[in-house]
Image (cartoon, rainbow, N blue to C red; front, side, top):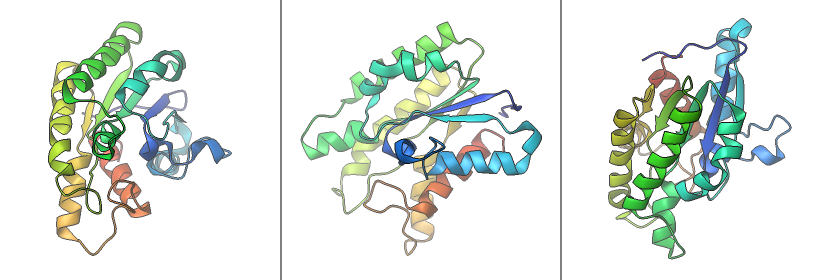
Length: 210
């Protein structure tokens, strides 16, 4: 699947800290992570058709937090492309013992917010991203706990006929196996600059924009 963009297109990224990546302190409001990498690549690739890129990621957020701000931070922005990356904190916060979102509620809530997109923004292209990874030094069983959430994103992408499914978990696992000496995350969750480039490259390839 290939998504078509032009200079009037609005591409909105929403999610947690991996999307946020310091956008509040960035004069561009984009942050220093994969959203910036995607924006800069698209501008350099085809300046005349470079889209307007918006980042509404918020550090620490889970799918239930997205639902609480969905109208303001997604629907009201009226994007032409909406990219959603959520799920890490839904599991990680369970492991940390201060909340989290179980898989049934995750699916129900995610389905609800995607339904709102289909109803209110019928021409908006939907891009769903797998959650990335929860690796050591985080608990050794964390990635196994994350697996059903990755599968849920696949099911929702099929259910809602998403325009692209971005296999981030798959690519992080593959990269770590190929080059375990390269630091892909800083703490088992948050990507390094190399990890963010892996996200950007995977996103661009999945959407047909690379």
